Length: 141
Image (cartoon, rainbow, N blue to C red):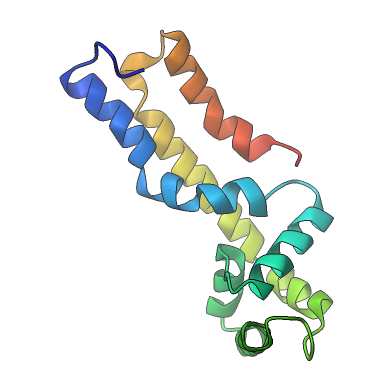
């Protein structure tokens, strides 16, 4: 796609791929925020057992939920849901507003990435890149 591009156009496409939040949080956006709640719970809980603390969990802990911090720490230590009920952790994430906050951030990053395509909107590649963030954010699973 970069073939034949120079200067500002090339830099804009590089910025699209390197938009810090978009690149860094693509995994969260793709796998943590599907529209199906059971998928979310499954993904959050499975990642935590693997030692991965995802953005919704970070936000839940950050929002002053000491219980969330304690539960996450126990799961990380046990590498399983032994002394922690998964339902309680999911409830804390939901109650804290962490999912809404994560979704807002995902939309902000997507918008930033899309602004990088300004000069390429008329090409088929540019149009494809413009639709990619919305496709990822709006997908069902």
